[in-house]
Length: 82
Image 1 (cartoon, rainbow, N blue to C red):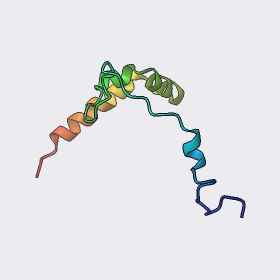
Image 2 (image 1 turned 90 degrees about the vertical axis):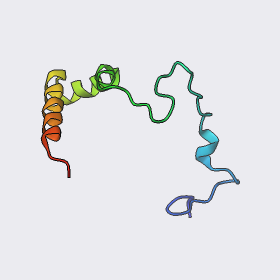
Image 3 (image 1 turned 180 degrees about the vertical axis):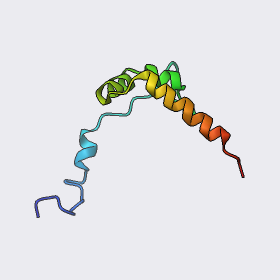
């Protein structure tokens, strides 16, 4: 009726979302996580400004998070593997 509520046909032959999207940025060779399968280290994640901002917002200190990670790692390593 109004172009929504289950009517998912493109308007004028093109998707309105596709018409507004920017071309995908091609990662540079200096981008360390551009290739699949490469993951940042825990230290990289904890030093990331976005992670720091979220932790600040949630009231989580770096020390308490590291303590939780160490305790969890020890617990998982102590379990017997089947």
